[in-house]
Length: 374
Image (cartoon, rainbow, N blue to C red; front, side, top):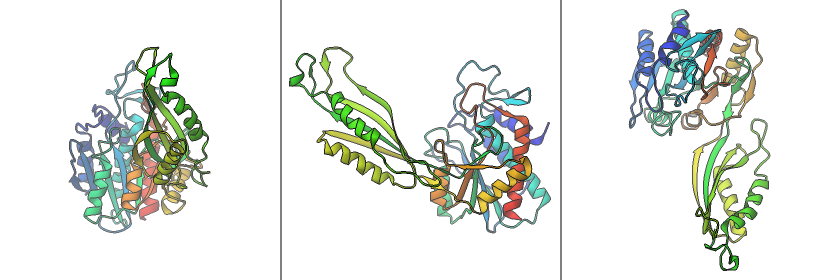
C-alpha cells in the first residue's frame, strides 16, 4: 500500500463532519513536524485550523485545504468512514473532497524535502475544518491572522477536486463572485373574491421578475462567463385558497464575473424595483468576491507538472461554486489555483476516488513543488 493511500485511509476513517476535525489535523501535523515544519494551531470559535511553515525565504508556496466533510446521507454500499478499495476505487466520505488531496499534499512534501533539503523559498500549509459549513471561523480567520503577523503568500494551491473526466484535465484558476438576496415585496392582503380591495404581491412580482431574468448584467470576459441571475425560492400565501397574500418573498443569487461589482448589482436590482414603484425590502449577503489567477508562474507550474506526469493538456476554468480561494486570493494577495481529483462523486453517496489517481496526484504535487521552488 502506498504512503498516500494509507494516509488517505487514516484521514477518511475519522468522521469529521463539518465543523468537526476530530483529529484529522493532528495526523497531518505529526507528519509535517517530522520533516521540519513549524506549526501554529489556530482555533477560532469551535473550529480547528492550523498554519504550518517550512523555510523562511520567498517565494512562499502554500497548500490549502479542509479536513471537514459533508454529512454522509444514507444507503452507502460501504461504511463511509471505513475506507474500502473496490475495483481500484477508494470509497469513503471525503475521498475526493478533499482528504485524498490532503494525503497527496503531505506525501509529496515529504518526498520533496527528502530529495531537496536546500530548496529555495518556503512551503506552507493552511488547513481548516470549516470549509463545508458557514466558513466564518476557518480560512478567512487564518488569512487575517497571517496578514496581522506580516506573513506573505506568493502562490497557493487549494486541493479542491477540479478534474472532470481524467486527473488534471481542469485547473480552476479563478471563481465567480457570489451575491445572495432575499426580496420581500409588499402588497395588500384581502379576500380572493374582492381583488379590487387588495393588491396581490405575487402578481407584482411576476412583472418585475421578468425584468430581472431578461436583464443582461454583463457579457463576461476571456476568463469568466457572463453573470448569472437565478431564483432559488419563492414563498407566499397563508395556506388557504380564499386569501390574497400580503407579501411574497423571493430568494435569489448572482454568480458574477469580474466585469461587475456586487455593489453595482445591488444598485441595478433596486433601480429595477424602484422603476415599478414597488414597496419592498431586500436583505443582501455577499458571500464571495470573484478571483482570478491569469497565466503566469503558478498556472504554468501546474500545467507543466500535469503534462509531465499524466500527459494531459489542462483546461483553465472559473466555473462551479465557491471555494476558500475566495478568501485567500484577495486577503493575502496571492496567486491561487484549485487542482485535485475527479469531482464526479463529491457530496454524493458512495463518494470515491481512483487509487491510481491518488498516487499520481502526489507525483504531480511533487512536480509542482519542483517547478516553483527549484
